[in-house]
Length: 146
Image 1 (tube, rainbow, N blue to C red):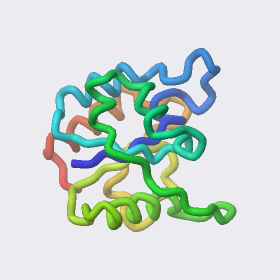
Image 2: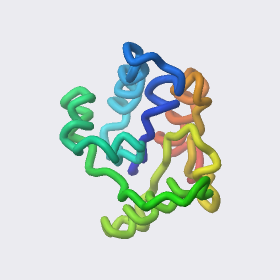
Image 3: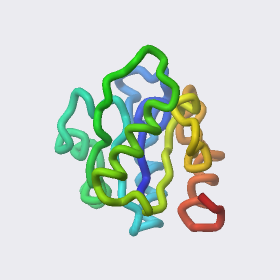
Image 4: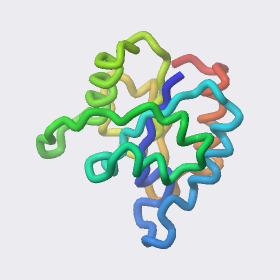
């Protein structure tokens, strides 16, 4: 399983103060520790201004080792629908993993069109809350279809 991870609105509230950035990272890491076969690809816009090593440095070493890449940056067209989805599909294709099961943990539903069934949607002002954790655990455990 590959999990495509957004940061803003997921690992912290979209409105988080700088001191509160990544406040939900411990919760995310706790969940992922229960699913050791899940690999992570960063799909967050943070990848546009930071190296993969810098992004990994935000995570605990055991989780950082599971971050296998970042999605490619596709030039944005204003309010392009399904932009993030296309970046994910491009990554899957270039990595030779088109047939791998995948999920996206994100707060922007409009960034997905044809593959919304792969989306675990966060509410941007709450991030990874109890409801999202429950949904993510169900999907990662294989108890729901993707």
